[in-house]
Amino acid sequence: MLLSRDGSTGYARPISQVSWADLVFCHPMRDFSRRHGQVNKPVAFFSRTVGDLIACESQHERRFMILVDWNLDVVHIAAQPFTIDFPVGHELDSHTPDFVLITRTGGVVVVDVKWHTAAETADVLRRHAVVDKVLASAGIQHAVWVGAPQVITSNLALFASARVPEPTLAIIGPEVLKAARSGARVGEVVNQAAEFLQVPAPVVLVVLRRLLWDHELTIDLSRPFDTETILL
Image (cartoon, rainbow, N blue to C red; front, top):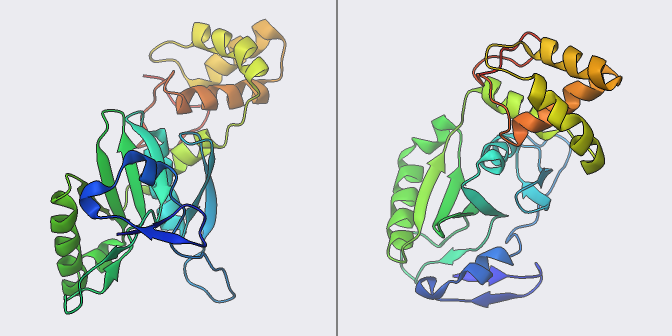
């Protein structure tokens, strides 16, 4: 297995000896390009989990990042963390997975992100079967993510974009939570808190979105979020 901590120089590590430190401090193994006419559009996603940007090679990968960044069981995320080099004569030359996740319980999950149609081709199925077996020998889980309903990732993207200064959150957040109740509409909660605090309703709405991202409030993610959304 090849890894890098600076993107310029690499080092080898037997897969059975890979440590959390190797995965936490790893640097993406490939360069991310963006050119005219390119089908996939690489982006940098700011992850609250790691407090830094994570490179995504496509919007599809960004949608996956939004989901795992919101998952409280995930404590670290890294893009293109390593390259598995296979022996000479093996059916595969190498494989660089898209992401690695470290969970709250210390588990390591390596993820390849594919469109559903691409994931079901014979070559890709065989490749992932080989990678799955190699990683399992080191106690590492392997998963292939093909997508989630767009309404869910769109809602979470909206919540993730709610940038609220901590002093503002400390003042407005408690009043939003006080006004919130199961069955209440978002607009009702926002207006009640805004009237009490004498602050603009749009400001309160951004704070409410931040509280949804922080799991302080809950809604049905399968429906588009708006002021008519009902709190659970």
